[in-house]
Image 1 (cartoon, rainbow, N blue to C red):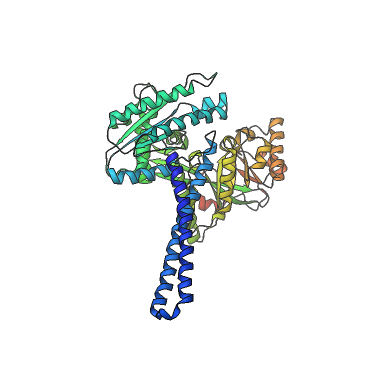
Image 2: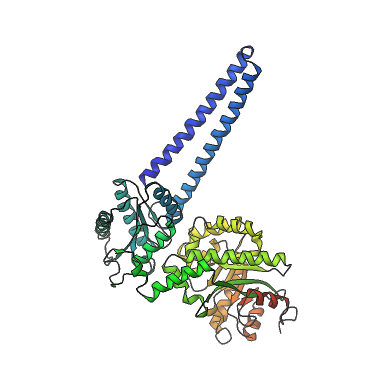
Length: 513
């Protein structure tokens, strides 16, 4: 954004000028004290010293604030490389909602739009490659940027759901809709210049902010929901304005409402599936898995609600819910002097691109007094394969914060061994699909043996998931696998049952019979 770039230049000028003023002021006061000390009383001297100290401290604090702000802006610009042909400053969803709150406090009105190209990160990416995706994003970015230059109180960002977000401090919905139509047509005109690209569809959802105490996060979610759930089935062709009837118009809408209520009422429970170490014959870890204890339908698996959460921008809330409750459980185990093992937590694509996620982890761990060495963060191979540079930098930050990291479902995301070398994971988890027929299929055995060898060569711990029989376990043990997870040892258990299982089971220290 050009306005933001001007703001950055202003901050740099300010820091330079302020530092110069401080330096010259210090020299001036020093000269006064040096050459005319007899004309100044001790109180005057003390006042000058004190004023200089407080002035310097205040100016240094202000300079530090702006330096930190510039550093954060620099990170946002670097992160944009994953989406655009050139680096840009653009708000993430987290930063945009903060700015939305600031604008809303001033004007008490607001209009929000979520818009993006349908199937951008699925069909278009798979067919035409990442460069075309970036080119499409670049064209959209430039069009929206031009719009913002000619309108006051307008901000925009790019979200983890691969859509653009536009917020305007205004209540003229009719004019806003006309602007969006014009924006869409401008984007279409630019896209038409790309040769051999079929017609793309731009979907737009709009939300009018009316409720005083409504959070900006809910505003975003409602617009995203409107964009993806046109009741007339004309997705993307018409601009869809959110209303309560839209949410209640189908089973998915009802599910979204139920999901939000379930998070608020903490209807979800964390289950733990143990990991067995073949070197020590001990359970040394577990994976945290979420289950929905529905008030009328009972226990629901993740497959019944995770896709809805992903489609409606709620997946990061679920990730944070799981991490928070895992930390609470670990803290409870420590207080009760229960056995501790490392717990792995799955992280969605949305959370990986959430700029505040690591600081959130650190706050939750501090609140519950949990050591990061007791936690492991799992990221899927497909996620790492699509965004290798960003994921590599993210993993390094996690490692610096004390976490170990694991690449999950390895073998289904088309990563090469050479790309694996560039990703600083600590643990490699072999996907269940390679384990299912390991007893009967030589190719599966050869692949698993190769993956174990490569993992060890890269100094990674290797684990196989989905192990269901003693025969599979024995084959993997001979291959010198490190860890096993699967029904052969234990299904996923609620917290209390998991505690009992760790304290009394038939597998440990018995040669695994």
